[in-house]
Length: 179
Image (cartoon, rainbow, N blue to C red; front, top):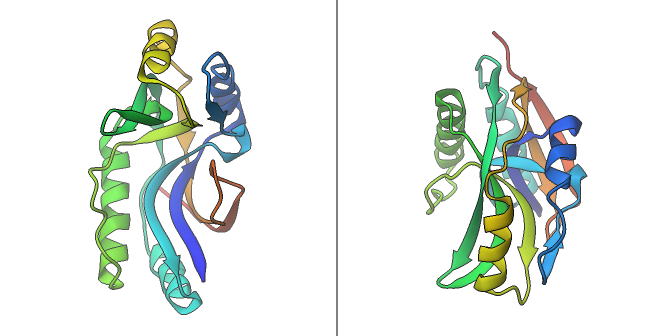
């Protein structure tokens, strides 16, 4: 059984800027910068045969390289309980089209559709016992974050193991974007 997802990697320079946001939020479990990424499509736990089919189907994606910008912060919550902190990724047309193509590929292989609306982001921290008040205070202090613009010249198929806080992630396949 493999737990897979497709994503865009965050370059080290952009990751460094994101890592400077770490700290000052009680109950936050900060993500290691080596595990920063922009998820395109969470696939989940699948058998190895289906994983091979996913990898082969993704090899037929032909998209040109593009650039992304990181701007602003967001808190995801379940009801009124905050569960994670993220940096927003400006949703370019190229990013949205690439994500939609991944969604179509995964569904064509018979896997269920993603039930949530796609919100491009980079998760910075997951919460345990962090209050809405703490998150609101932290966001008011850091909410004007603007990160560097960076090129995207490939997407990857990651595997992960079930763990608290995400990671470590392993690149199973890398797919270059070509003009």
